[in-house]
Every structure is written in C-alpha cells, then in structure tokens.
Image (cartoon, rainbow, N blue to C red; front, side, top):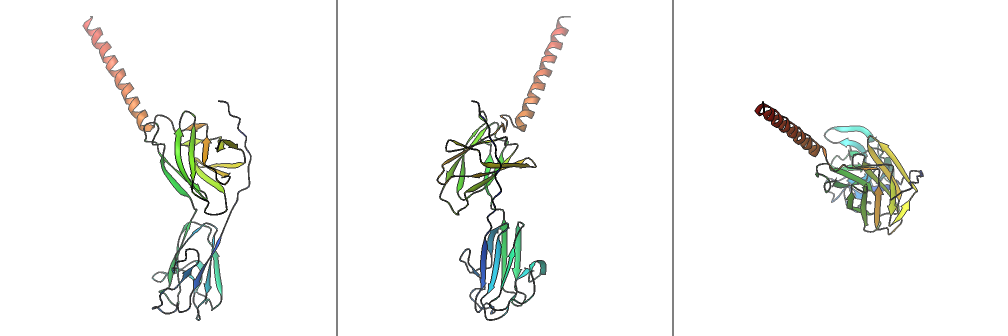
Length: 266
C-alpha cells in the first residue's frame, strides 16, 4: 500500500482554567467543621488538583483576616507563592501555577488551616505498550491528554501502526488530543487516520526521542490509527543477545566437529 503523507502545522492550543477556594465564615476557629470551600471538587478541603497554567483564587468570605502562605506550619513560608500579608474580609488572592509539583500552603495566623495544590500536566498513561509483539520485553508507556479515554486495541509491527479505541463522553470542550509516543516504540513521519479518514491538520514535535502529536479529534469519533515508519522491532534486546549467543555456540560446536574430523582422518 502506497501512502502519501501530507503534513501541516497547526497552532498549539492552550486551555487554562481558574478555580476558587473560599475561606468560609468561622474558619478562624480551630473547632470549625471545615476551613475551605473547594469550588472545583465541591469538597470542604484546601486540597485541589489542577493542570499547568491553571489559576487558583483564594477568596476570604470570613469576618476576620487570613493569609495564603506557601509552605507548612512546621517549616514556615517557602516563598513560592502567597505571602504573610493579611487577606482582609472580601479580598482575593490568586496565583497561576506554571510548573508541576505539590505545593502546600497554610494560614500563618491560623496554622491549622492547611491545604495542598497538586499541579500535573494532565496526561493519562497506557502502560506496557508493545508487550504483545516480539519477545514482549520491549514495553513502553504511552501518555495522552484528551477529553475522552483511549484504549489500545492493536499494535501491528508489519503495518507499523497503533490503533486506539476512543471511549466515553467528552469531559470538557477542548477536543484536542495530545499524545506522547516514545520513538523506540513508533517513530515518524506519521499518518493519522480517524474513523477511516486521514487527518492532515495536526502538529508533530520530537524532543529527546519522544514524539508528541496534537490532533483535533471530531466529536463522537470511535477509532484512531497512527502509522509510522518504524515500530518496536520483532526481536527485543534480550532476544538479540540470546540469538547472538546461540549463533556463537553453533559456530564453536561446528569448528570443534571439523577439528575432530580432521584429527581422525589423519
């Protein structure tokens, strides 16, 4: 099959969000039933999970002053965000998180008020891709970020392709799939096919042997196929070593047999 590969570069789409954490009335008391109102999860906790470039806004709905201070009561402020300045009733402090990590914070006036901002890049993992081909020892994690779920259904080393089933319903409006493919698993240039139709409007970049592909997936799509020019070889590293040792043994046995035969015929 002859494939004509067409490539175009689309601008990178960034969708950041802002989330509120309210400090409720009475939070200044250590006996208060809760100290935060997390509007993202609906839970009465100061812990929140967000993505890189998201913003958290702390709003003081209490009748007394508080602080939003990065750090812990035991170690003190670490200066990453917030400060020890008073957050007066009705005021808001907000911060945009641009790096992954765990960011604890607390109120220096009321140190029993603690929380953690957990910042991730939002990627889900499909583990052990490649274990069904070759000797099964060359396996990789495929990471993706999408408003639906992906399930790997086929790894075809002959056709050099990966096929994913697209599952579930959209969890948010952004329909852009960003998928990370190790070059040792599959390498480009790539052809992208969604429900039998070739997609030419996508972005591909490669950094440190990791391919990142961004594709706008039509709503209600069912299948995604990524075709490359290389896929994990049929024989993994372990098989190659075993094969090499076997060949060396065969050569040594053959040479020994020839030597013995020559010795006997003399």
